[in-house]
Length: 172
Image 1 (cartoon, rainbow, N blue to C red):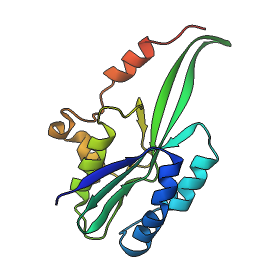
Image 2 (cartoon, rainbow, N blue to C red; image 1 turned 90 degrees about the vertical axis):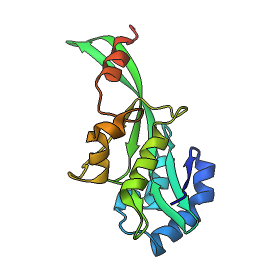
Image 3 (cartoon, one colour; image 1 turned 45 degrees about the vertical axis):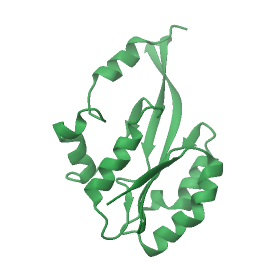
Image 4 (cartoon, rainbow, N blue to C red; image 1 turned 30 degrees about the vertical axis):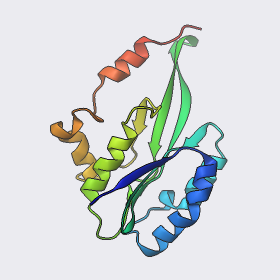
């Protein structure tokens, strides 16, 4: 499969893509959860000004193969000693809406998952941590994070970047 990948990073781009995404959900998507519905994703982004879209779209000659609805939000994490805040660290959290990505019926789910995760790990993606809620075990995404070969040069469940981020905490 010759696939092209695009990443939607603004509400204007998301609005332009919305009709195609809705058509994909109606006609070709194999499974779509409530939190992955285009209208729900758009509403959640519009009602949270601290969040920005990060929707990865995988397409082939046959049309859309996968939509990975994600959003990115910057947050401050305070470090407290009793009631006194002694430091704070800012982090950008990438949230995956739903427990997997939305794939076309008959699409290669493992290949699409790898393509999306590689796109999310590419240079220029400005997030520090990924939030995965209710990740099914086993699943292609779970397998990707636990396959040592797939983690070389891409996403991994390594704690060193987390510790390095916390070591750079700013004092108030």
